[in-house]
Image (cartoon, rainbow, N blue to C red):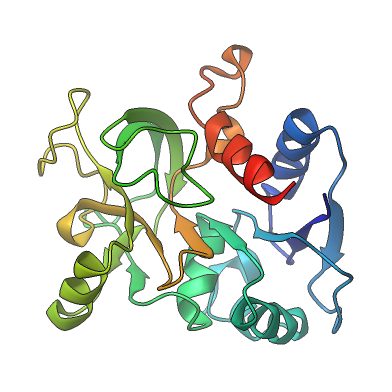
Length: 229
């Protein structure tokens, strides 16, 4: 299985992601610098978390125009799976690969703590090893994690089953108190229309084994590896 992790200036979860991929798949991913203009043959591209370009202008806005992103967008249009975590989610929205935008947290502060999200569907290559309605605990670490879109976009992604994860409480109830950043409709992660691109704010790569504080993120990578192997 051929996996690439794109590395931007300011990425700080690229190594975490590489370790998680090797731990679960047994194969080291290819690390690709953002200035590359071509990609090898791949089964999956991952945009990791971090603070690309120092989050100047807007989080992910500059990285979305890095040379490598032209090829990522072209491959995604042909069906290549793409996963964006935290800053990677921001880059995917800025690049137009996912609808909506990630805005400043409603508390206007950086937040970093474990949170719970609910799996909205198991019918995707990213979530097949989870159960719909399952609650998972993962860490977050972001200042711009408030998902926003207008009502027309929100209604469309709801109708088409593009909401992948929602912030919830430990029992799976979607409440305002369980929403850490003010995301509209408690949205924590979304797919594109074909469910081949996923953006997710929490960090599954930081929760792949009990020694790291939990292993709820492991099934996301197992889902991908099982589907793409």
